[in-house]
Length: 191
Image (tube, rainbow, N blue to C red; front, top):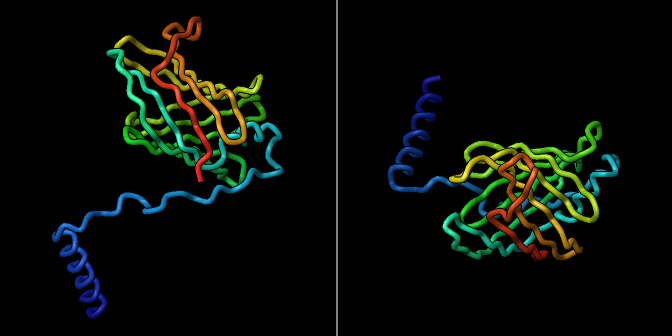
């Protein structure tokens, strides 16, 4: 028992010395891309509605700041089937935010549901989504900005096998009226 205790103390002392010498902790995988996976053939047929996002995407995003200025930047979106091919995970990696979005089709309610988790928000946001007329429309739980509380609507459109677009819109009156949101993007299939 004494020799085990000495061995544990030796390992702990070595690890402490390495941290004290400035070894940075590993905060993420060096190659974070997980295998893409496949949709489960036993999942509800509506699950195929999210097939268009599966894969790796190079994104050009236009972001509008509250002061009216705009910035355009590049990001990466890694989207894969998870939960044995019943749910979609979208992993966003950009210079200003990173996060994940999880979606699963709810057969009882007839729409997609899930949540978004981004480092900039601090708390998850519940979402619902529906596919109609060739577009996927995602509604994000209310967010508050300098103007007030609004619903964020993301519409994926012009969907092809290797490219799609998305725009955001905002409603400060519970969906009665909509205005241009803070961002839009174009996603092209990456390698």
